[in-house]
Image 1 (tube, rainbow, N blue to C red):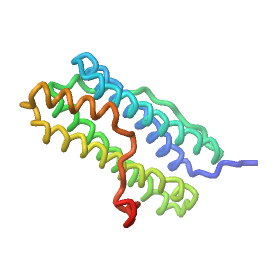
Image 2: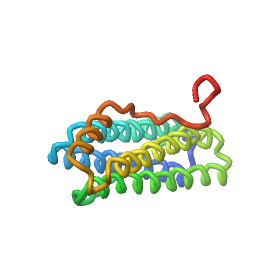
Image 3: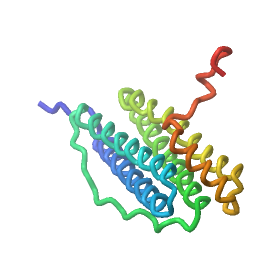
Image 4: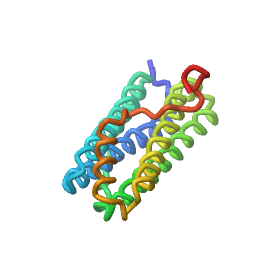
Length: 183
């Protein structure tokens, strides 16, 4: 008896996203290594944690595919981009990567609606919400660097930024979760 509950197209699209999440993990890991090498241990630690979070996302896709009777396919992971030239380029790369990932997530949501695969549509809603967080977090990185002075920031400003990011939680507060008591 066939117990697979995913179309072939959906199984492939979910596997592709699983691989995209693994690639994201490698990108953020490489950015973290770059930051660590430059002496920004706080920024590196932040990026390492983000790399682990992306890997966890890939595992969510893997488990979902398996739970729906499919078999995830692991593809070769492209090499991460070259080291950034600056913190601005690094943070812009994080943001660009998250926006690209959001676009992929939306394509999966569209496919699930097209196929009337409501289980996958429901599963994807967690990722839609997560991408709001991820983009907010990446935008906040860019904003913090701008406040510090961008690529012309003083050593003292960069030291403070580095220390701040080391202590920054992985989750960004979301406006839709705000209340009068917890703005």
